[in-house]
Image (cartoon, rainbow, N blue to C red; front, side, top):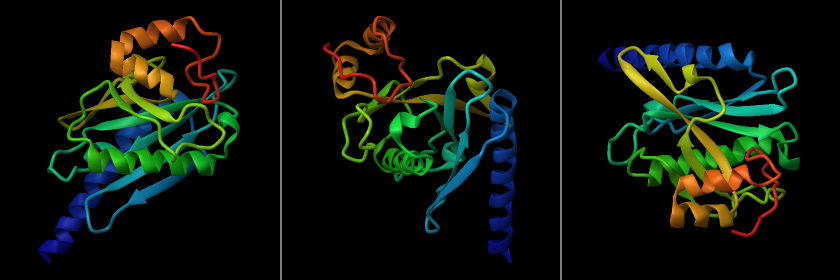
Length: 205
């Protein structure tokens, strides 16, 4: 009986988390179109990833997590953050399913391998990245280009930080690791292609 009550309590806790975080997303981006669930029954990992199509004419689609903040790493530490990945409406020539798969790979790796949630964090180039993208590395950083209301969402007494999850090129990853994210921001401001375009040229840094 105690086990059943514990399970019910966890389910209620997640339902509340979903209601608050998904509600915050929907106030900004309207209704999601698709959802997938990343779940590991032997652990407490249960992460939902939602796809939000472009709102009106902004041309930006978003993949956003719910539940990543409640997942625990092998060291017992809660992740404490959620991710938003903005992309151009064409998804860099890939399907929604392919982006879902890639994002789930990144999430699983982050839970298993990242010892904390400090940002900025760079994941170097990976063969798991979609084949049509030039951006095979990955950056987690403070949310940018979104409403300030999304920077931190209050779930009860817990402040959940929403992070920007951005595909970057190998050259850009080296720049961040070598000179810091400020140098990367300056670089992005001076190129013709958008930071959310996963097929932008590799560039010379």
